[in-house]
Image (cartoon, rainbow, N blue to C red):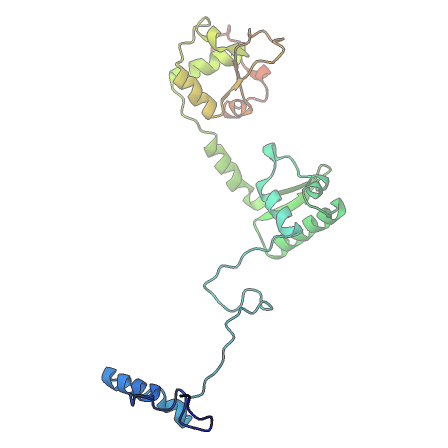
Length: 251
């Protein structure tokens, strides 16, 4: 039979029908057993107040006040241009504003020029050891004059390559007879192993060129070896025409 509607002791706060402990008394008994204070005593006395805290992040504060999270660079046309200038093009070729603008949707070449000039002014104001310069071809990020000596020193160290007699012999045969098919190296007196040739290719001193599809070259359809620009840099040659005559005695 349901309890009367006007019974104030009904519900969770009242004693159960079987005479057992109420929820409040059960909580008090459990707290006493664990040696803890009554969890409901402070709430009833008003000593503590329940404060609601919004745990959702504040999206209006960029980054917030947390120091544990790293600050990420904002990806925009200015930062993209700075990254492209930092990487640069092979051979130190200037990066044109038109070329950069084609990589970004809705950005014009004139805007790239303005952003590059802005970067250059910021580097100068901050006393950075690098600068953004322009010429007829485009923009370059490079070391300032007073720091360029360190870049030259680093480049000189990277050009140092340890080569044994077998490697030098293979390079000489290829340099004076290029392009040279693999099968013809032995005929020219080069006994370089395939492993040595692969090593020279990995070091960037030689490159293996595949034959043309129409077979118009003189390699007979076989890949050929030829020297690279790094070969010229290592041996301080402007072009292959600067190679000495192999028939002349060494100087």
